[in-house]
Image 1 (spheres, rainbow, N blue to C red):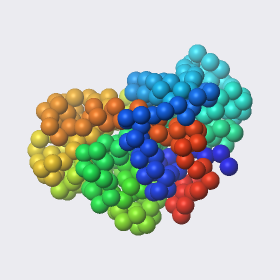
Image 2 (cartoon, rainbow, N blue to C red; image 1 turned 120 degrees about the horizontal axis):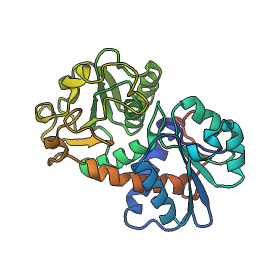
Image 3 (cartoon, one colour; image 1 turned 30 degrees about the vertical axis):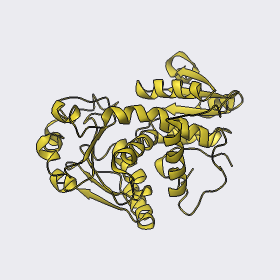
Image 4 (cartoon, one colour; image 1 turned 120 degrees about the vertical axis):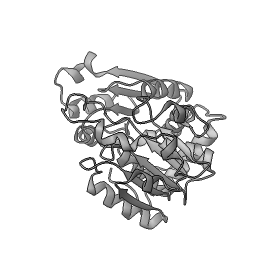
Length: 317
């Protein structure tokens, strides 16, 4: 069966750990497990880190990146996603896509006969979380038992991925946001199910200080996600109490690590003082996109992992 990586819980805890172990080793030497292979990387949303890290990473693994701008191809002219998936599956060894709807991603994966990787959707950002967990490992010595607090828009894809990936990694995940910006209850339920098995936990809170109290990791994201710029909602006033600043950070552990997936709106969700300060791992986190995605590709496409062993908490793909 073709394995896909559409959301964070498509890797069970052992698989997630194996990919992160591989990512750590690939920071020193990656080899060429994709030699002779091609990977299509499709962008239906704007990108900087995702575009560059996949392009460079695939090349470093010995593969050929086929970068596709949706607006310059038939993706932007009404061809069905399933037809495109069938065609691409005959050309390439994997498909990476950054798109909007999770239903569109699922349709692509259902029709593809090669692995499909979610490079960001409205619902999840699982490749980012692999990078974040690698960064937490480096800064905190591991993930199991550590507390991660995410504050801001708790209804967005980063919140959902922190819940699922953090629970899979055995972390105690707290997300906090204002009324009307809560995570999908189905995602919270799934994360709680995973956490019960890994020894982690999940909490959805309202008070940012309660969320951050004694946390090992404090994470945030932009208050306005791509596609929300013109939705007519006030995306500043409700979120101001959730700004990651020196006062909020003081409630965390003295050695707490600060994460932001970027791009940042400095002075909104995070202050310059924190983002450029000693607690910040933001740019290490950005670099780790390259290493984590290389490991995922090597594991999923290049034969570095077993695609047949799902384990008790294998995902839905």
